[in-house]
Length: 125
Length: 239
Image (cartoon, rainbow over all chains, first blue to last red; front, top):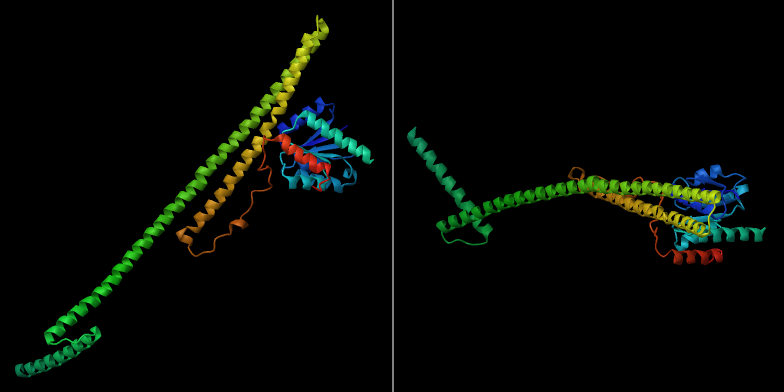
């Protein structure tokens, strides 16, 4: 599964990519913000993990932008962010985010959420 | 010639005394009192004259004191403005720079630590390769290497603190930037050179760009905050 990892922090991208490799996902593409993610998003991307607060284009705007694309309507989106205010989480889900992880995360939580999203997508298909 | 001059002088003196008498009467009436004699009238008039002059002198003194007070206040405002500008320009900039320095240092340190963890992981891989090549009498080595790999991976996860503290520092920096703008605004309001002129509205000042930090970023209570997210996701954002 090809995963697009979007975060403006190089440290976080590295931690996410390492964690993904650790749980069996080694095919990762990185982007530093939402705009770069939209540019890199193509038909080969099967899963998107994104931060919220980023320059140029935020994670929530990225979710809306992807949902507006024909090839992005059904791509699973997992948000990994420090934002944990209830209204923010609701806004993210309404923007099309499939699941939500509050930083700092553990690899176990990352795996659980990816599995939950994939099983939800499979059930909906 | 001399006789004629004396007559004219006497005539002028009489006329002057009559005028003076009339003036003294008028002054006496102004004072609201009725003096009994010419001497009393003259004294009263002199007193009245002195008091009227003193009134004018008093007003002049009052204006001079008021002017000095205004100058003092303007000077204080000038000094306050100078202090505000110094606080805004020097101290806040310095603190801002320090925060950025700390943020950059933390990011550099985090990268160095991650590089070190990667190298340590490679060494564990090398140990695995050696064990495979030369063999081991039991599986204790393999167990220790696996535990070491877990520890290294856990350490990598802890490096998320860098992203969170970076956001906290960026937030602190943004607060300082806002404070700087507000102090500069107050300094402009207190500028004696522009008293009465329209001051630019603080809200219309150019912004600092898109927000790239979470003001509530925290390493605390992760499980509780994740539980809130899980509940909302489970109910499909209808919570």
